[in-house]
Image 1 (tube, rainbow, N blue to C red):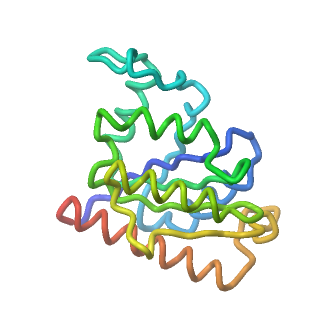
Image 2: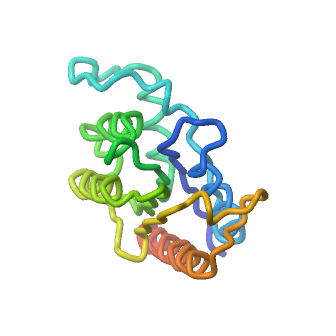
Image 3: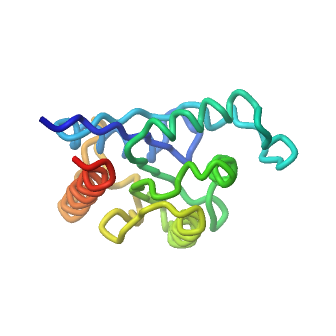
Length: 182
């Protein structure tokens, strides 16, 4: 019997009721029979990245983040676009993983859900490539006009998007199986 996969979800928005967090909730429900998705809640607690603090004993919030990342079989990132780029808190979190290689060879599903989102999506994919995350094309999704594609219960209402999310879940599950040998 296969072990259930553990996915760390990172919401690029720090808003309590963000569209991106609602997308994560929708995906969590859709993938419930295949994986356990846990939302990382410490994004706002991470200090500004400073190489002088990135030592053998980094700040406690950084250590906790890195431990959660290490324990995860895969990662789901869902982020909005702010000012034509990634939100600073998300970029900061990604910066804290460079020296620890926390994303190196880690399966990652990358979703940008915003009004437009193209620039943030390009930035996210570029950063994930540099930190050596495994984010194949079926695990990349740009959702424009995102707020219009969820209902009040966080169900995806757009048939095309539902299909793409299902493909993303299947691809992420497959890559995690491949990475850990089933």
